[in-house]
Length: 510
Image (tube, rainbow, N blue to C red):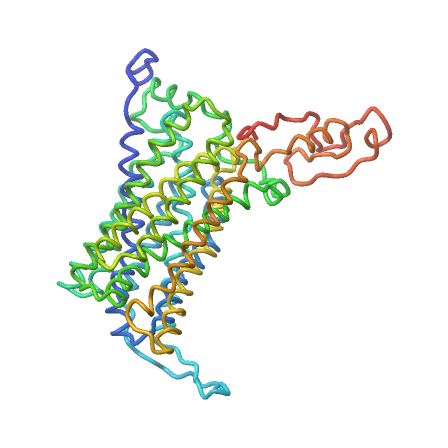
């Protein structure tokens, strides 16, 4: 006997909006755990006796692992469903958040031949902390690709910009809360307790999410037929399903869009990770701001990023309604926002007041983050059913920029200190690098074309397929050159296992 939930004329339930609470809280905790290290850099480096360069490598360990593991963990969601994968991801990174606070101060020389310089390798606090943060990054790597997959599965096309905005804004609200919460906990209980408490929050989230979430909205007992129909509106037919076809890497890796979007992510990540990891230290050691004031100013910068993510979603909706070429309105939006960020960051250098300088840095982060919803939209448009894996691929391409920001900043500051520089003279030299990187990202946006799929053949290849110049395996993995007219002469007859028809090349239909 049908129940009320099967009545197609009932009002749609709002389960997808409850899901937003989970996705938003996940993103909040993700950045809370990630950004809290920036506020703890000073006490950690003092207690464990690690230099600025060493702390740069500690920060870089996270980004290195994040890049290495993002594609496989994103693909796991495509294959096995995001419920199991996200639960394991959050439990993993929460465990290593707790373990960060358990790294002791120690040094054990290793029984190996010393270097010519006289330096001796040792297993010490630096090495152990590097390993812990590397494994922490490996745990966080698949979170955003799987969140992107959940959004594409659970929300109708018209509501996805709002869902993306909630995720992005929640991430940066977590980043904004981290300096204040971490600063308070570090001052009251010490940095070790702070990491333990942050890790326990993630464990609680994983338990609640696993009990409540279902990969397919149709499997959730609280979703009625009307909401299921609403969710399916405008969805690319196979877009949210688990990927059963192999990823067509020959198209993906030859796609100009993939490399451009990855480079844009790298440029944005470079500045973001400077703000998240080094900005509190810059304020305290470069501008002489107290630890109490630095946590609020660092929080202001992250709050600027959160505001930008929200405003970027609103701007994306406005851009959607423009009667203008779909490609260029996206490109020009990304270009303008990145260029504005570069201008604001330049202005911050000329402010003597730490507060005024921070306001301009917050505005720069606001503009840079405002282009993120546009980036998500373009990635979704070109990725088709392989969104989890391709989002992971392009997001992981941000690792070089993030790694550069973490390691280069610590190295450059130590180099300037070795030359006798102090305060702002030692720290301000990093700014021109990040300003140039933002302008480079703005230029990359001008070459992105969201009308060209990353998983479908372009028009020229499609023509070759149609005329038999190349053969395409049924699960697109290879393109095989064929004699004119196909094997055995015209008309072309597909070999066993080859596609018998050419699919359209519109984005997102594979």
